[in-house]
Image (cartoon, rainbow, N blue to C red; front, side, top):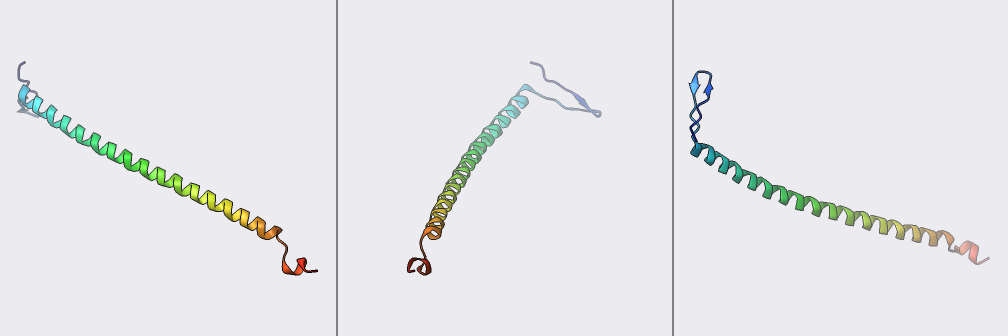
Length: 84
């Protein structure tokens, strides 16, 4: 393969195959690092979503318990009505 020499504003830049291969390898390495970071971010997001769902379930359970307790208090006779 011949070296490519594109002209840029009056200057000549020589692009040898070795230079291009090195740049390609550098970019592949960067891509692998980005992919690792992406997997880590996805795992962290999954953990946050699981915590969110757990908290929502706990809130729902407590709301149900509060509703049951309120229903018992409303239906239970008070001292003024039970002793007469």
